[in-house]
Image (cartoon, rainbow, N blue to C red):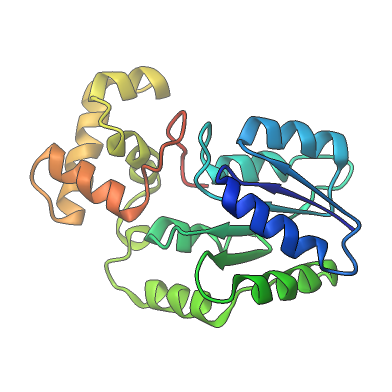
Length: 218
């Protein structure tokens, strides 16, 4: 099988590359340092598995995953390796396009080998600590996906980046008054009273992680 890793940290690229090459079933390992290069390599190589970080310098990791899932004739299996443990990342790891999720903590090498074997066999891989985090989020009465509407979820990445109502309206084809109304409703639901507090809440929840453009929750 072939594996493409998309990771901007050179130390992690080196570590994972070496670990992957030790797996007998892995015939080829290639690396990319950003999302654009990763997408180009994925189209060229058609890898079996893509190992991807969620923090990329040029795009949001979940946006890259959505694009990878559209590759034809056969999209790669997606294995996330990230330090992100915010609510948005934990929620979105359950996306059907994600086949495994590892944190950059603990015995990463062992988990990486186990994950590759499971994905190659057509299964998914989520370690116990990841499953516990998902269960805890799902049990939280005030979890963001339980209290925010679909439109509010769409707008939240824009709020996290500090865009004003007019800017968001132009980007999404909405009036500034409509955006303002959604902003006020979202603030009431998450228990904040001022826009700076909303920005802080949205970033802490995981809605603003340096994406080139705000990434809507899919």
